[in-house]
Length: 252
Image: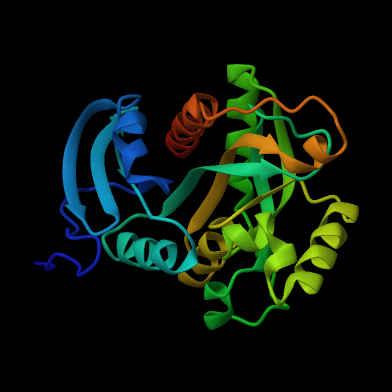
């Protein structure tokens, strides 16, 4: 019998192949309420975990904390317990003008400006989402009739490096890279997707990511309307619907 894993605090007896991953431990119970028969499963460090069901299949909801290192540890250990499909549900800041607060962003790939994934594979290797998971997220957003965008996001390690780059010794590079990503069509910025995608790729697992747009600093700088939204309901409901679609697809 497997011993409880050191960081997440539980073993493989849960029987779930799917996991929904918010960063915030406080959002786990909120997500779990959209599952059938939700119940608390475990809490250790930044990893708060609930277990429920979708379409008769066991599904875990587990927080990863903020940033790449804790995300990688969580995914590695969940995979050891039998989880094969991961969907991150998080928040982001818009970068493209068309991305407005309250929109959901489905990350098809991520710019690897974080450090964790570099300890898995060289930067030339792209961080991309699983196609089936991404298609399920897109269909889920359509089914729910939420405003959505799909494309590349920037994944970083420093929140304040983005929001106060001018006071950083590396600010020149940060500000120029930011403009480079915008010119290339990057939709939004967040902190976990690239790590999730690379770790899943190396493990042979599937991963996707959906994000609630909190606001858009580029729209604010241009004097455009810039609503602020901290309501993650759209991203949560879309992720749950995507898991349902993936389960149905596996059963058909």
